[in-house]
Length: 283
Image 1 (cartoon, helix red, strand yellow):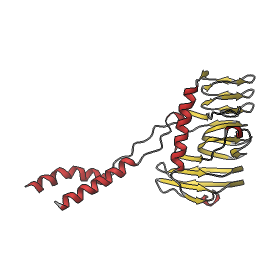
Image 2 (cartoon, helix red, strand yellow; image 1 turned 90 degrees about the vertical axis):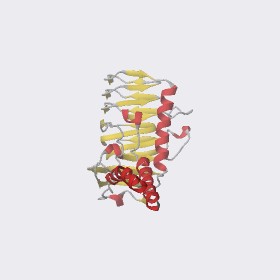
Image 3 (cartoon, helix red, strand yellow; image 1 turned 180 degrees about the vertical axis):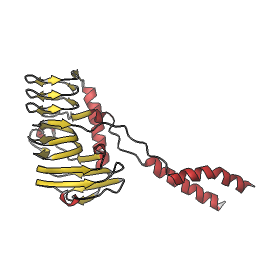
Image 4 (cartoon, helix red, strand yellow; image 1 turned 45 degrees about the vertical axis):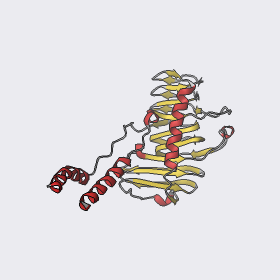
């Protein structure tokens, strides 16, 4: 009987651990290459400004988008108010959104950012992660202030790796960048979890990216996100409170559904053998 109780306890613990493991669900957010959803009294809250001839290969949503002349959105654009420059092309057309649509999506972004922040992580500098190899599971870091000029950080892993970089301070990068090798960019999160009031969106930036190469999902739900001229943006998404972009080509990674975590083979074998063990104990 003691053996049976012990076996049941082991099975229960494995089952609990297995069911609690999951991939971060970006749900509707992954439908958008760019999203600016903050609300507030400032005109900059929810603002998404494009420079001229921006080329975005995906959908965009912002409360107040402004499209520079010659911009091309290879998807649809959604917003509450818009400013269109000359010769702007929206392949998927314009969608007039209401407050509740932005609120719902912005709440999801806030929940995801809080979930990532709660993971904590090892305090380190971004530069020290150059050459880092993923664990094959969840890799979480809290980044020191980032100030990089013409430096490249290369990170290696597999499709099973999930990377979370929590950022609580400034992030300035010009030249160089962050290159992912063997890692699914859908499973990489740079989470700027600081908070500022709506009136500061016009001048307080979560990140300022220059002529750099960045990949993965970049979250800054309560902050302004700035990307300057010459950045390489392939397999990239940005979801922020507000954005100012002077970009050329912006390509998000293909969206994918969260993958269910399979039960370990040992657990399956134990569950299959449990009825036999119970029958023998009863004899």
